Image (cartoon, rainbow, N blue to C red; front, side, top):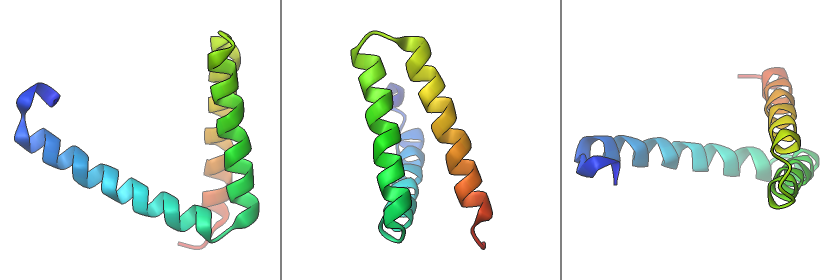
Length: 76
């Protein structure tokens, strides 16, 4: 894993932990957004499994743009 670099592995683990905690917090505090995220992810996976990379990329870009909009509107 990561060329057996313990420092990179530790940094990635800490980063992933922060992302997981943040995601859980964001998704459990807003049922509407949680449902929207679920639909976005379902659409991305469906496009991938259907062999439609352009559609998957578009769905992923749309999801990222929407997430930026949602999180940008929230108080910090």
